[in-house]
Length: 114
Length: 115
Image 1 (cartoon, rainbow over the protein chains, first blue to last red):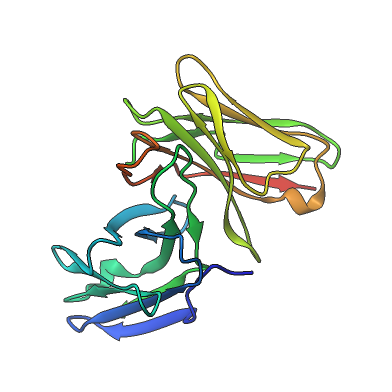
Image 2 (cartoon, rainbow over the protein chains, first blue to last red):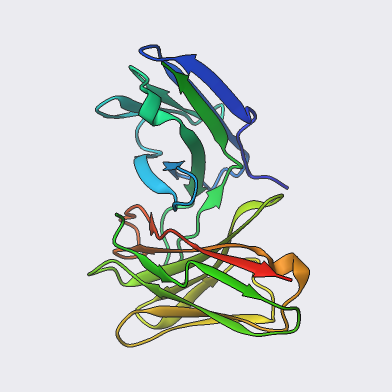
C-alpha cells in the first residue's frame, strides 16, 4: 500500500517555464514533508521541506505548497533550468517521537529542454 | 557533497555470502538511517540509529542487521544474500530525531549486485 504517491512518472518542460511536480499521501499522521532531487549515480539531495503548520514554503526558485485537506503537495520550480533535469522524490514522515523514518514516493523524472 | 560517506560504492558478490556496508554521517549528526532502493520498490526505510541505539525499524529482513558505533559511523550487515537483495543501499544522517525535525542528508549509496 503506497502511502506516498507520485502519479506522474515523468514530466517535460521548456527552459524558463514553470515545472509543477505533484505528490499525494494517504496517511493522515504525516505532517512533515520533503522534496529531494536525485541525479544518476548520486544520492538524493534535499531541496525543500514543509511542516503541516504551513501551506507554503519558498526557497529561491523552489516553492512547496501543502493542501492538508486534500492530502496533496506540489513543488513548483520557476524558472526551470536544464540543470534541474533529475528525478524528484516526495517524502513524508510523522512529526514527533524518537523515530523519524521517511516514506518516499516513487519519483518523477523531470526533463527541462533548452 | 552531502557530507555523508558510504563505502564501498560498488559490491559484487554471490548468493549465500555476507557483506558489510559502511556509512560515516555528517559531522555533528547523531542519527543514521538506512534505506534500500530496488527497481520496483523505490526507496524503502530499513532502520534508524540514534547515538548508538536502535530507534526504528522498517521493512528490514532478519538476515540484515545494523549497528552504530561510538564514533557514530554505522554498518549494515547483509547475510545469506539472495538475488533479490541486489539494490542500491543508501545511508542518511540528520542532526536529531525529535520534534524539531531536520532534513535527512543522503550519501551516494552502495550498489550491491548479487550474481
